[in-house]
Length: 214
Image 1 (cartoon, one colour):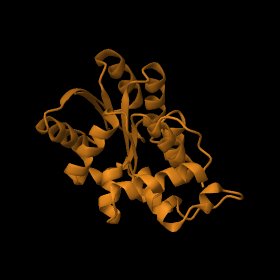
Image 2: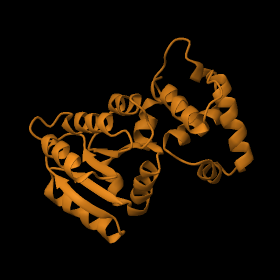
Image 3: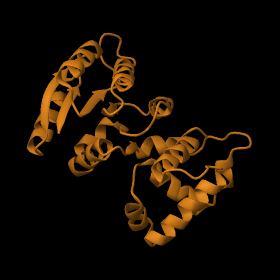
Image 4: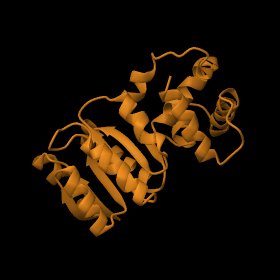
């Protein structure tokens, strides 16, 4: 798996390189700002870009903007963005263009190597993941006539875990229920949110967007 790492903090950048190399991934390039990220992604054609959202020169949203541009050019490119801060609006912006193969995690998640590698594999396999703290931060938001408000407490739990990128089996294990019970809850969520029949992975993305945009 070809990976490009864009991070201006040298210690974290080199740590990510070492971590992924030890896992057998091929780190084909690194970058320290948005301009380098775009140029090196275009020349090295990675399968996965791991990028800090805030990079030089302004330390605002260079990583986000670069990732969105690269995804427009290569929709198959998987992107995992890292942030020091909880930014719910940034998460919504990221997945609004299409959530297949995208992720948004807080930098502290890198410390949990197993979960971080699992997140990388998830986005490369065209899944999506939003950091649990960002999901939790959206819990209190309300909107008039929001269909999410009609979900039961258990269905909200299931949808929150879906937003974290968990599979049905992982949700079942976390909630101590069966896979069939999870599937029933998810189908009920789709119906309540008015999501028409389609690929289940597509409906999962739409359901998560509804949840995050409360």
